[in-house]
Image 1 (cartoon, rainbow, N blue to C red):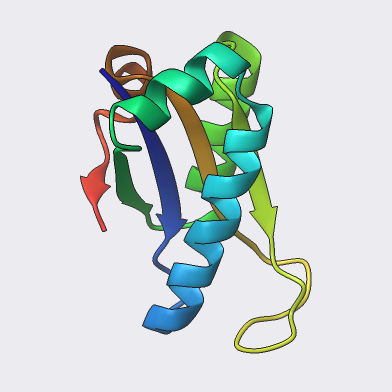
Image 2 (cartoon, rainbow, N blue to C red; image 1 turned 180 degrees about the vertical axis):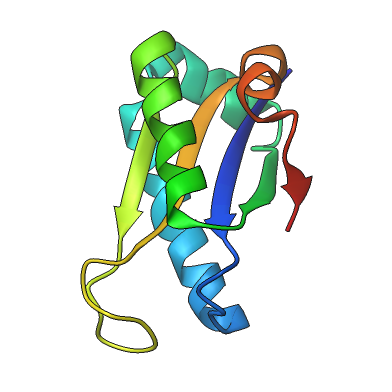
Length: 114
């Protein structure tokens, strides 16, 4: 089975709409980085996603760099333009996958659902 994980910062106190928009950016950008086979398999299986949380930018960046440096998972860091609720250049979330549940869980299994 395949899935995609979105990891969102909770310390920014974004509104629900802002969180949804940032999650969409993360999902789409990570999807673009996945290989064709993983994209097709994920689409065929129903495009499962999970949204998880971290409490700080430091925690978000630590996870992002760990994934980038130790795996081949498609991963993207989202930085907000600052047009609405938060300051420009604020790092809001990361998107991981689509990839196998096992690979994503190995990196995110310790996180709680948003």
